[in-house]
Image 1 (cartoon, rainbow, N blue to C red):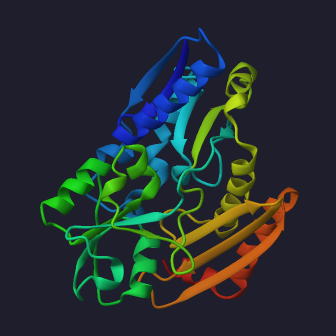
Image 2 (cartoon, rainbow, N blue to C red):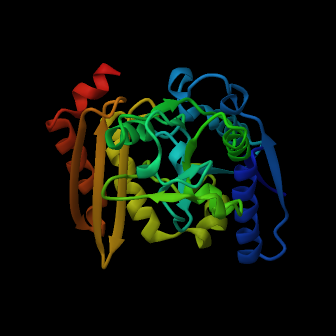
Length: 302
């Protein structure tokens, strides 16, 4: 029996079941079960992520299941995976990227520019808060935790005038019609690796690596490597308002990144491009450029 570890949220289960379906298609007859785990990040919903240890809280129990041998594979939203990998584990494959951008979901269908001053916007992300206040300093940002359904319910109940979620999560759950506006470049960049599903296994597990190899998307892996190295060089977790987005077109990686203060008053931008084989190098250069222009000072002050 091949075992996949997953969180219990609707989106996490969708992702795990999607991977299970792909594995069954690639390996007919393979018996697969899901090990559903409630993580610390799922249990603590009354405090901002940045104050309780970051998105790594959604991974620890899944990684423990891998290391203990209770699971063969863990399925993650890549944006939740810290830049430094837990010893003994590897992210050996990523699936093709879905929509990487954020979505504004407003209660009355108003786009960002049309929201009245003082409107209450829900998000638990310092990145989203920084970008939002840089564009609309007259809005009020309020912390919002919980799974996708919980966040939408709180919006519908009137606790917020609008909320910001990932397009990929809404679309994967069949809720794409809730999107009022897609927030994209040049004024808005997503989190590193947003929209990418990553497959994690034990470093020495050759059998699992062989099973997931047909699922791997090499182009997405190139972009993910470039984006993740920016976060690694900056030491960025969800406590850092970092946005970074890469594309791969015609063998060329183009990378944009932003670090901002939580109040959105200072935004530092950097960009670069290089061939696919230099994806990590271009990520390092973009990170160095951010640091050169003051990102380190912003990060140190957080």
